[in-house]
Image 1 (cartoon, one colour):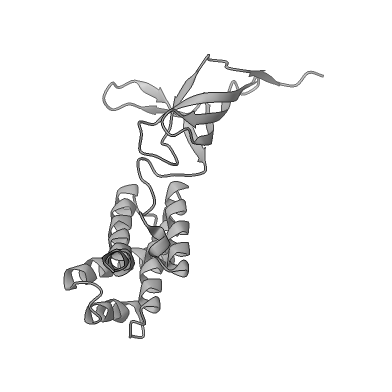
Image 2: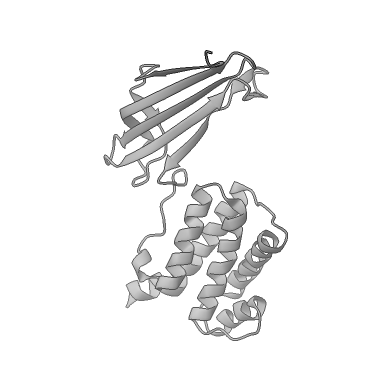
Length: 222
C-alpha cells in the first residue's frame, strides 16, 4: 500500500544562493551565502496540506561566521497583509546559535562577575529563542544578583534597589527604572506574563546600562 504522504527532497530546490538572517558575530547587513541546503516538501493527499522545511548551512558575507538556519511553513500558514489586503505565506525561521536582530551582547562582558554574567547570558539567549517569560524572569534575576554581589541591604528586592542608590552605584532615576523592571520580572514569574519584544528590548537596554555603570566603566576608568 502506498503512503498517503508524498515526500520530495531536493538540493537547491529554488536555486537559492543567499539567505537574509542576522549574523551571530557582526552587525553587517544580514546577507549570508548558502554553503549547503536540503529542502523537503511533503504533501498529504488526504488533507491536501503541504508542509515545507528548508535546512541551510549559511555563511555571513561580511565576517564569514557560519550558522545553521531552519525555515518551515505549510500551505495553511497564511495571514492577511493589512497594507495590500492579500494573504501572505508565513515562514518560521529558527537560527542556531540563536541571536537577536542587529544586537550583540554587552561589550567587555569579561569585566562582569561570573554569576551576574551567567544570568545575563542566559537571559540574552532566552530573548533570542523567543522565550519572553523566561527572559522577563531573567531581567529580574540580573538586578537581584547585582544587588547581592554588591552586598546591598534589605529583605527584598525593592529595598536592595534603594540600597544601591545609598551605595552610590546607581542614581535615584536609575532606581525608579529598576523598580519598574522589578514589576516586569514579578509579572513574568508569578503571573506567567509574556512581555512584548519591545518591552524586553527596552528592559535589556536598562540592565546593560546597569552592568556598564556598576562593573565595566569603573574598571575602564581604573
